[in-house]
Structures are given as structure tokens and as C-alpha cells.
Image (cartoon, rainbow, N blue to C red):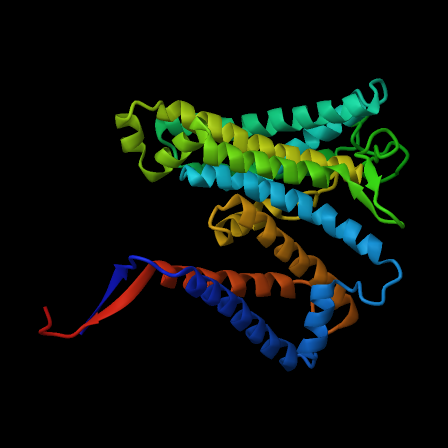
Length: 367
């Protein structure tokens, strides 16, 4: 008896949805078992996690404001990564590109922020972050097309180069280092929130919507149109299916790779500018691991731009809600969200495999 994996001809949409929902439900049930072992009521924990503590909270508007601050960089980074992934260029360097984009954005805020009007400063911050992060990604793409280097390994290593640059800036107490607060005895990043920050639109009551949220959804729509209805988007799809076919069709594959990777990294830099421009300060944890989580979101969404926003919203709720719930239950660490996210990813990928393939058992002697 032997097992063969056979590709499915078709899997109905209802069956796909049922499998994905079932995978998430099973993950939550497994999490419930762990919570019970810790002496925590899963129903109470999950209700607090999924509501993020907003029920009965007089300052719930602050919860949603903070939630959107986490949602924006994750959604935009995930969309950016999906661009490269569609072309089968495995950009694992989201963390490094985000960090350099954040540094470039803060550099502009400190150096030209006091002299330029605030709207113009914000624009220059975004452009600088996009340029620096884009060039960081383009460097790897150039090595890939010129020498055939492994982009997964290169982008992964460059993450740590960027991280140590940020750590150096965080610890180098010197006159030239304007990133640090000169009034502090120990190295502490200085705030530029009083110089420049992204404005918010009041929407009634005390809740205000940051402009970065609107820009993120607008960029997502533009990326969808770019991939779906433009020549460049079609070229990305063809290169992703087969670089050889693209070359046979007369496409300039190297140029497409360079262009797309630059755009992918530049959008990650823009996400960093949004994060820094909203926070008004750098930090060694400025990324909140969106470069890594964005990879998970992109794959869970099957690189679908619209679905990326839905999954980003759910993953952000999972992280933010787990932090809120962990503050209530001392037995549960906030890293419970990471464990639950890993279980969900594993089971969803298993469900995705089942929608694409089926296992056929062939008995000995069967033809």
C-alpha cells in the first residue's frame, strides 16, 4: 500500500471557507485546553481578547485608536510583501527595511522639521523612508539578477544589519547623535512629536481617525488595481508563474524584478514613516515584529490584497486583545498570542493543502 498526493481539479468555495473556519476553531479549542490547564476560563479570556477590553470601558475610544496604530503598519507591510511574493521573490527583509525607513523618517523630522511647514515635512519623511527602504531592498534584487544570489538568505541577514544600526543609534551618547535626548543622563531616544506628527480627523465624541489609516486603505486599493488591471501587474504574475515563460514572451525579467522589489521595500518604508510619524519617536522595538508577522498575514491571505486587510485586522486583534486579556489573568503571558497565532497558521496551512490536493491510497496490485 502506498500514498499518492494528487492535485484537486476544483474545491468549492463553501468547502474552502468551511475548512479555514474549522482550522481556526480547532486552534481556539486547543488554546482553550491550555487555558484550562492554567486555571483560566477560556470563555472569559476569549471574550475579553476579542473585544479588546472595550466592553464597559469608558475610554474604549483610546483602545480603538491604539488598535489602529498597530493595524496600519501590519496591513501595509503585508500588502508590500505580497508584491514580491507574487513574483516568487522571497523578501524576508521586511524588518530591516522597516527599521531603515523609520530611521530615515526620524532623520528628516529632526533635521528639516523645525524649518519646513508640517505638511511638507510629513511628505519628505514619507519620501525619504520609501527611498532608503526601497534601495535596501533593491540592493538584494540587484545581487539576485546579477549573480543569482539567494534573496531569502540575503534579506534575512540584512535585517540584523539594520537592527544593529538602530541599536548603535540608541546607545551612542555623542554630540552628533541628535536622535537621542540631550537632556537625559542615559541614552534615550528624543521625541519629535512637538515638531511634526500625522494629523487626525475628529469623528464625533473623543474618537479621531488618523490620516494614516485612510492612506493605508487607499494604498491597498491602488495596489489591487496595479496587480489586477495594469501591464506591470500582469508581468509580475507571469514572472511568478514562470520566469522562463516571461522571457520567451519578450518580457525583461530582470527589470521587472528590480522594479517590483523596490516598490515592495518602498511601501514597507512608507509603513515605517506612518508608524514613526504617529508615535513621534524612535525605539529599538519600533517594528513590533510586523516584518515577520506580515509574512504570515500575506500567506494566510494567499497574497490576496483585500483578504490581507481582513487577516491583518484579526491578527492585530489577536495580539492587542491578548495583551489586554493577559493584564487581567496573571497566569497567562502576553506571548500566548504568538503561540495561538502559530497554531492557527499551521492548521490553516493544513486546510489550504487539503483544498489544493488530496491523498490517494493505492493498494499493492492496483493499477
